Structures are given as structure tokens and as C-alpha cells.
Image 1: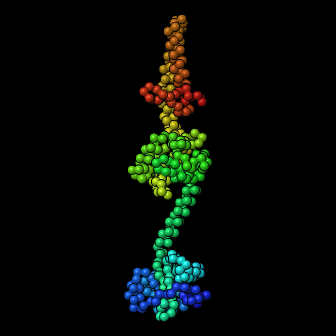
Image 2 (image 1 turned 90 degrees about the vertical axis):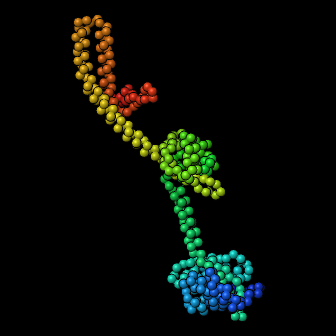
Length: 358
């Protein structure tokens, strides 16, 4: 846009032009510009002298609403000084790249305009020829991308879950968030540039190898249960999800990890409680059923010992019955669910450990 009425900008000798302006042939102009897909205008003395149909469509104004009006009428007031300065530089040949500014259409909507200008002779008088292109959608897309990137970075930094960006093949850490550092116990400088296998993060390295295979095939992994080793050596249970992304010129993965150690521990305790309840029911029933025959056997053995007090066999039988009685007392005093290995990989209740707190 040019504006001669305000400080005499850009179209006459007052702009210090050294180049000879192009002479615009009216008939030739009509053939070239009337049906142009680009908005075109001619400004003279700071006012519109010609606007093509595309310019009218973009601005929302009709020809009669524009001709004779100042060119500043469609420019956002905050952008006007920059528009004048850019137009002067371009007319003088000091700038070649198009400049961008905000315009306001007839409905009051803000448009992002890409514009170039050149000096011409129009009706025998110096004027400015402008090319006016609507780039609103492009700017909105750029703004949306910028906003989404800002939101991503905020989520990355502040999330209570671990966020990690690492190379796909070698697992070199490119970036990690505070939650990762806080939970693992590492400092940032101890992690960045090092590989996960160097730190021993994956407690089961073969699981990472399988995960990489899945990522190559599907491009993502969702809620993989894994065990991660902290700097202290502690093993924590996690849910691990990741997607393959392009980060710079590198194929990387963006991983989100949720610590479920407390949940796994609570689940383990719940299962142990359920198992303990089952054990207690069986132990209680067994003790109840055994106590009466044991008492009767003791009575019989005492009678036998009265008749043959020196019988070693009878004494041994009584000792074994005492042993059984001791086992029933342990069964009655079980307080925890403890197991030990048995034959062929099976497990049985470790009665001594399970009743040690009795």
C-alpha cells in the first residue's frame, strides 16, 4: 500500500526514486489484470484508482466503495507504518521479497495479506501497482501449528508421566521431562546423549528388542507392561506407549511411560489377601477335622502306655501325634501368605513362615 497524503510515501519524486516507472497501457492492462486470480490495485496520491475483481472479492468491498478512498482504509492501524516502510523499500528496489500484513475486510474480519508493489506511470502520472494475495489460511495453519507445538512442549515438561524422545534404533536419549528425572533419580546430563542400554533402564532388554520390531511394523506401541530399572537399582513397573516420529533428520520415538508400581503392589497384596483367605478356610477346616481324632488317639495311646509302659513303638507313635498336633497349631496361627518351592516347579504354603508372626 502507498500513502502520499501521510508523509508523502512511495510514489513520486519525493520518495527519491532513481528508476523510471513503467508506463501502463490501459488496453493491455485491461486484458491482463481484469481476470487475474491475484488481487491487483493501482494507487495514486494515496488513494485507490483501480481495483480488479479479485481485489474486490478479497476485501469484500465493491469497486465504487474503494475508488477514491485512501489505501489505509483496509490496513490494520497497528500494521500501517510497517506497510508504508516496506512499500517504499520495494519501490526503491531495496527489498525484493513480498511483505505480509493484516488487513480488515468489509465484514471486519482480519485477513493476512502477502503484497508486492512497483512504481508505474498511470494516466501520465506516477502511481503504484500492487499485487494483493490472501494468505489467511496459511497464517492460521501456521498459528495452529505453533499453538500445538507450544501445547506439546507444555505437556512434555509438566506431565506427571514420563515423556522421552529417543532415537529409534539405538535408544539414545534426545530429551526427557522432569517426571522421568524425578522418578529414575538421574540428572539430565547423565541421560541426554546416552542410550537406554547404557543406563540399563530396561530390566528385560529382550523386551525392548521386541518393542522395536513392533514399532517398525505398526508405527506405535500401546500400554506395554514393562519393568524399568532406576538409578538406585530399584525395579519399577510401568505402562509404556510410543510412536515413531520424525525429529530433525532422525527417525525417533516419542514415548510416554506411566509408573504403575503402586498399582501392581496393591494388586499383589489383594491377590495375596484372597489367597490367604482361602488358605485360612482350608486350614481351619483341616484343624477342626483333625483335632477330635487326635484327642481320641492320645487317649488310646495313654491307655496302651499304662499297660506296656516300656513299648518304644507306642512312644514313637505318641511323638508323631505330638508332631501332628504342632502342625495343626501352626495352621491355626497362619497370618500371611507365604509359599516355597515344591516338586516339578510347583509351590506349597510355607507353614513356618506363614505362621511366624503368630
